[in-house]
Amino acid sequence: MNNCAPIIRRSLKREREKFLPGVVLSFTKLMHPPERFGRRPRIVGLIELENGRRVLGALLSDAFIGQSVRPRMRLSHVTAEGLRVYETAYEAAGKAVAPQAFPGYILALTGPSGVGKSTISRMLARAFSEYAASVPILTTREQKPGDEGEYVYTAREEFERLQRTGAIVAATRIPSSSEDRRYGYRAADIEAIWSAGKLPVVVTELHLLEDLARHYGRRAILSFGLLPPGRTKRAKLSQLLHRLRARGRDSEEHIRDRLKNAERDLAFFRERKDLFDHIVVNEDLSSMLDYMRKKVSGLSGA
Image (cartoon, rainbow, N blue to C red; front, top):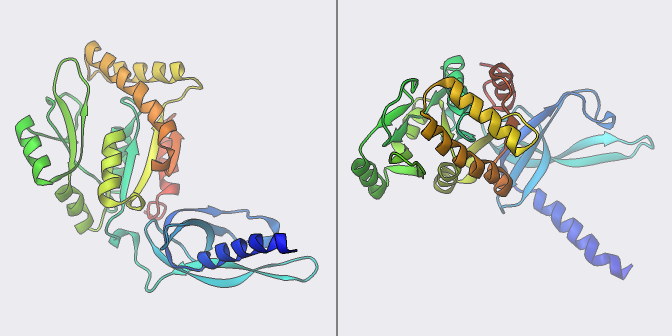
């Protein structure tokens, strides 16, 4: 019995720790929960408690990423023997705030060139224009056909000045054999979208995603990793090659550069799983839009 005491103490400590307020990192709705919970849909969220620990818990109302919640005990279910079982569930802390008014929530789309990040970003901004907006990308590369207004072009010297002054909060330099290709996001552009009551949508690669998470905090980023179809790395790269050639925006030299960078990006998905909330294969745009509608709070009702 004495040998069990430390185990019991640790178990009780873990349960006490769950009874802390926290923030919703992600959530899902179970339309058909286990039978013991009844037939009503059940919302389960990943909660980051104020002590940094992450727990899974039932949410007592519709939730959104970044929502502050507080715990309370509630009846979970009654066993066949009539035993009443209670659980720690989470409810909104204070007055509920609509997702559109939440300041500090960024939707990030990450993946290799050709996977469809920019296309999905534009689709989201058009389909849900009252809720979401694409953040313009600052770049030193030359303008190309098909950019469709997603970039703000600048000289390298100006880009570096903005970095030094802190105006750029996320930056990267993409290796290229023919041009200086730097990309970045300005805090003013992101905050202008928040001020308009909308969700900023960013297109990122590994360094941009790391910088955004470092600057705003990981829990402020709802991150989607996008992969091309294919069971093997070779099959995935073949899909990217086909897409890059089909869109007709890059020379063969630039396509070779992008494929080299894509190999590194695919490895990043394995090495930094902690930076992604969802990893999904982008097989067709219609399915992706439906998937995003289900996973991004606020879009389902837009």
